[in-house]
Length: 173
Image 1 (spheres, helix red, strand yellow):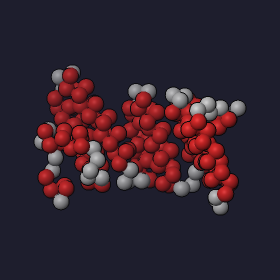
Image 2 (cartoon, one colour):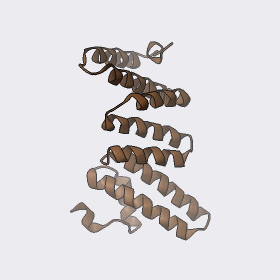
Image 3 (cartoon, helix red, strand yellow):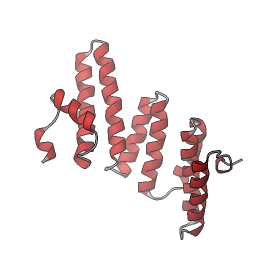
């Protein structure tokens, strides 16, 4: 049974009904409609913690989707799942692919920075200060780009950049 027929709560059912109506009335190609249906089902499965099912839907949506901007969000969501599963290399790969298609996707920039920061903390805990600095510098690079695009977001990252001495003062001007 398709996921759209299994939604139990009112909000999911309402979203599904609205999405189905929009899909029917939009003057788009059938392939684009199918891609959106898989993407929607992937988001629903992801929200339920059904990551394997979500990935299957995202893979199919990615195969069908032609629009680069829409593909970037599919890739981003795939990255979220990989990160949730502790598969940081795979997550970084998906975020990178998303950023190639949509360089202004601050969510992917932020999540990439979070992974590099985490790796810096791990290296620091292991006593490898050189590796920690390299990872922190990489995190700073991604956070500074996200902040350049969305200056009012990522306040905690801005504070970390300032306290760690990695904030470039001229970046906000």
